[in-house]
Image 1 (cartoon, helix red, strand yellow):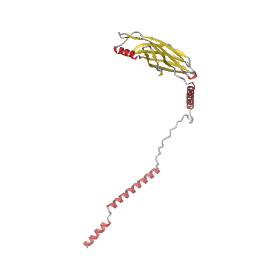
Image 2 (cartoon, one colour):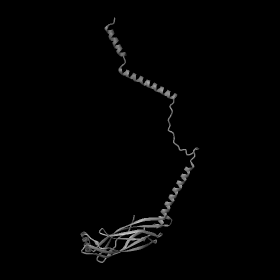
Image 3 (cartoon, one colour):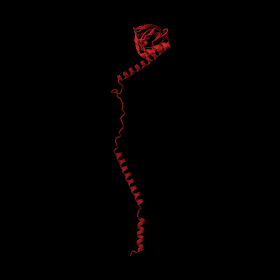
Image 4 (spheres, one colour):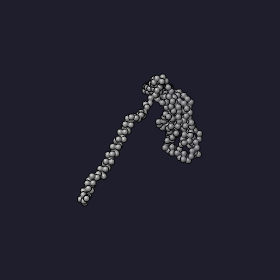
Length: 257
């Protein structure tokens, strides 16, 4: 017969021999790892027995000829490019040395002198004036002649045009100058009341100003270096003493454009 003491002993023995939940979890993890290692070993064996092809990126190369040699036309193009590059470098050096030695100067036009011959207004608001202007075309190059062309000037007073001055094409020897003398005589210019006040103020201050604008084309050739062309722009204000008509000197020289 099984006594109560015997039953208690059997129950305690069964509890001791039962695995804990933690041990069960560790055992399952161990079994899974073992199974994974086994599958990995099988994959390695499979890859070893059936190696996958290695996709290597092909190298690009240019085959210029059937036998692998460079094509004749490519060599010819390279030689031509080299010759052109050398020519450009030599040309640049020659131009630079020529500029340093010759030191070309751009021809200019300027106002050398002027005189106010007549400046008169009446009570009706009509202005009469006459101005003598001397324009100088100067060529500062020591080794080349210069040509001036398309010369034209405009003289105005308070925005109203008085006269246009032009000249035919002419040459100026090297390191020399030429003068163009103009006598500008205007007809009666009608003035507004505001302009008449400006004229009266000019007489009081003994200073009157006229606006001069003009331009020209210049060209000169320096030996083997070719022809040089520039545009000259002249813009200045001519001032006079109306009492005696004398010119107030000021810098009035063209600028290159």
